[in-house]
Every structure is written in structure tokens, then in C-alpha cells.
Length: 331
Length: 190
Image (cartoon, rainbow over the protein chains, first blue to last red):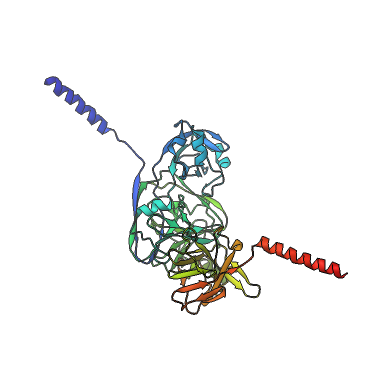
């Protein structure tokens, strides 16, 4: 009996010592956006799908990267599903940390090795692989599945299917053509494009959406991982609908937008951020007026610490294409 | 100096008034006749496109980026144009039309083999901007057919007898044949 008590005591001490160790995981978060009936809301989803693989880059090829952490990355992927790689680290001063590149799923599955073949021509890439390559050795990356409209559908309470005018819609902004692309919830399982073709487009990280709710109120509830590295936005000339990388309210300086080196341009015709008014009747426009200050519509320097609300999307106007870096905030 | 200050303030006072980001024609109680026969195919919709009709040349110019369909099983006509700016040919207040066409082979209107074109005096291109507004249009008693026929009072709204148009290759062959006949006639006369 004494022996048992001693064993129990040793076990208890062992458990206590384990409990005493502090384990850290990447932060997780929760977003909820109310979607009133007959309304349109700008929505930014800054929560991530789970990491399928976190590894370090052992070598870089012309068409991909190789990880030493998996002998068959393709085995982690499902054919027909979209995936991307995000760099979690990178040399200071480079635009590597936060860079994202889409995965060539078919080629990666076929490779059946530690190699991840990347889609060089994907418009979702924040940078060209060859530009990143000199700084990629040893960089830590995460492999994740993209989110798509079907994923969002599962997270929208009160999502209503119907015909044009009665079914809910999601709008994506097409920077290249400066136009909106509308997707209709035509049936309880399908999104349709303007040609009534069933589609399921992805919503890449940093991409904002508008949700048009018809007659039934609802809400969007998203649970996911929180990014724990810098964020990169590949902005084009003109307008784009973006989100700023983290599910927390931020100031303009909080995303590093008051620093030219992060990819922002100031001046009387400088970069602009447009925030949709709550009633959907227009936008508040903010201008990067001087090298350090953003101005509101009344030409007053913006000081609002929570101007860039979590869960909201913003139109950004750029006079020229630029890689914009958003430094990781302090959690 | 005063002008510079005013210019600076003007640059900052950027106001975006929401008008519309898109226009859409919708109708959910429509039937379509193709060569007098009710269109009942459920596996393939007819295409529908917004654009402008030039009666002088009988040419329908589709607005780039517009999409649309007629779904026989739903009796639904829907066609949508998303834009943010009023650049040509989307000039504000321009009367537009909708073409409904056979899209069995392709979504492309240009290669359709039959079509009808409708318009309405109220169908005017709105002022587009970055906004999220949507201007809805419908088929009414005042809607008229520019090609084909349209019957609002015939029980249900009907687009009748789509106009058959020769495919470009057929038209080219036809033109070549006519040219050959003319050449032959000229040669015989000489």
C-alpha cells in the first residue's frame, strides 16, 4: 500500500511538473458580423484555416520550395482544393515575412515528396518566387487551404437561397476591371455567377467582400487561427477591397500605413482608404496627405485608434502597384 | 497660397456618393418561345446580355462584363452588369437593351444562332460609382422588341420567335457566293 502511495505521489509530482510547463500555441480568434435584413455590409475575414504543415525551407527551385519536415507534402492536399503557402519569417527589411504563394496542387501531389510546386502565375501571389528566392533559405512557412465561398456559406447564419432579387449575394471587387463581381446564393448548396454557372471562388487572405442580405437577417460567425507574422498586400493601381490581416481593431499607424517604406505613398494625390458608412450610403475617405499623417474628409489628421475595425473591409486606392507590408501588431 | 490651400482641402474632401454599382434586369414569370415552340430545356439556359442596339445596322453591342441567363425551369430572366465607372459605352442615361440568345454552344453572344432584343424607355444606364447600390429593372407593358417579338399581355410575358442570324462563317460563304455570281455575270456581259 505504501508502495502504491509512493507511486501515486511520484505520478502526481510528474503531472504537476508537466502542468508547470507553459505551452504556447498560435493565437486563435472569433469574429461575428451582424447582417441585417435588406442590407449590405463590408466584411473582412482575418481568421485563418488551420496550418496543414509548418516547416522550414531547405531548398528553393525555380518552380517551388522544398521542406524537410514532410516527405510527401502532396499527401496533405486534396485534389481540386486550393492551397497557399505563407512565409512566417524572413530577413528584416525584406518582404518575405507574410508573402504568400499559391500551390500547384496537381503537380505537388504528383511530386509525392517534400517539394511544394507553386503557381507562378497566380494573381493571389504577393510576390514573384524568383524575387523572394534569395531570402527563402531556412524561412519558416505555413501551408493552408484557401477559404472559398462555400466555406463562408457554412458560417453565415440565415443565409438565404433564392432567385435574383431574393437570394443573398456576395460581391468581390475586381481590381483589374474596376468592377464588382456578384455571386448569388441560388440554391441551398450552390453559388452562381452572372451566367447562372455554379462556382466556388476563393477569397484569398487580405481580400474583402461585401455581403448583400435580402429579406432575412443573419450573421457571419468565423472561428480560426490568428496570423502571427507580418502581412503582405499586393496592391494594384486603382481601387481594391482589402482587409488588414488581423481580427483586431487598428489605427492607421497600427498597420504601418504612415510609413512610406511599407509601400504607402503620400501627397495631395496620395493613397486613400475608403470606409463604407454604416448605413451603406457612402464612404468616408481618408488621404495619406503628408509623409506622416492621414487626413479625414475634413482635412483633420486622423487619430482614431480603432478606425480600421476588425471584421470590416476597406477600399484602398493606389496610384501605382505596390507591395504593402503590414507589421505584425503586438497581441 | 490660398489656391494651394483650397486645392489641398479639395483633395482631402473626397466624397463618394453612392449611386449604383450594378444594374440588373430580373423577371421570374417569363416564358420564351423559340421559333414558336416553348423553350423548355432545363439542362442549358439561354444567355442574356445587356448592351446597346443600333437599329441602323441591326447590331447588338454587348456590354463587356455583363452576364445573364434565361432559365426555362424557373421562368427566370436575369442579367447583370457590375461597373464602378461611367466610361464609354456605359455613358449615364444611355438607353440599353437586353439580348436573349441561344447559348447552347457558348456563353458568347457573338456566336449565337438566334436571339431577341428587348428594350424599354425606362432602361437607362445609371451613374455608376464604387457604391454597393443596385438598380433593378423589369419587363413591363412598355417593353418592346427590337428584334423578335414581345407580348406582355399574352398571359405571361413572352419573347416570341427568336431571330435566326447566320453564323459568321455561313455569312462569309454566302457573301463569297454572291460575289462569285456577280463576277460571273460581269464576265459573261463582257
